[in-house]
Length: 59
Image (cartoon, rainbow, N blue to C red; front, side, top):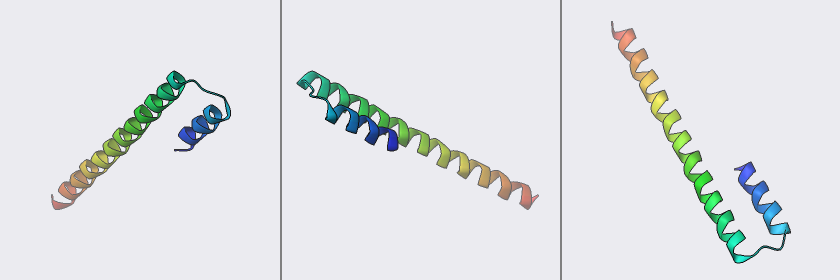
């Protein structure tokens, strides 16, 4: 999130054309999607690890 805010601040400080603003929005949306994908994968990995630990304790 900090990187996204930094990008926004940098681009807002410059006078941008409409195309530049659209590009910035596209980059920000892609970054948000990437962040959510990473979070999702971490959560899934944590669930898998918990299931493995539970299964090994049951044995």
